Length: 184
Image (cartoon, one colour):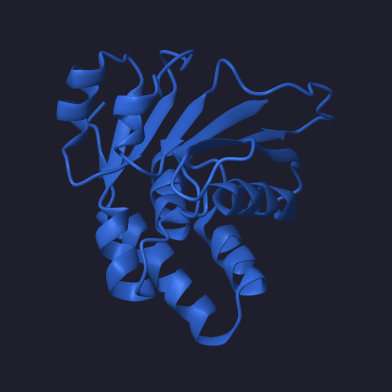
């Protein structure tokens, strides 16, 4: 089983990113779970969402405390929360930032592999708003290969319609191409 924990702020599409990843894995025959963790927070408050992917039935029903992958949609959350808490040493940290992966890895003191992408810039240019959920999925796919790019594109096309779907597919593909992945 692979466990993914998403960190971001309300209104950025954190829950949607978690759900889209789960749906892409479901297309590939995986068993999945996807759920958010937030209370009555307002838009802009830190939130988390969780996705589990497995070849077998998932019986665990808790939040994810030792993730294989941590995805940070808003880099300011790094100062508000310990996003690497519980992250496995052989895991992945994927962050929406213009910074280099090695620089971030050193600053956070993580042993996990790091991938970065300027998802905010991509989202503003292609979507006209800082909804970074689809671009960050492009980087997640490129770095972790948990699901295929084709599966993510298929799910994006079935979730959104018309020009919105088209723009989100372009955002996924561009983030996939522009992902900066730590040399391992």
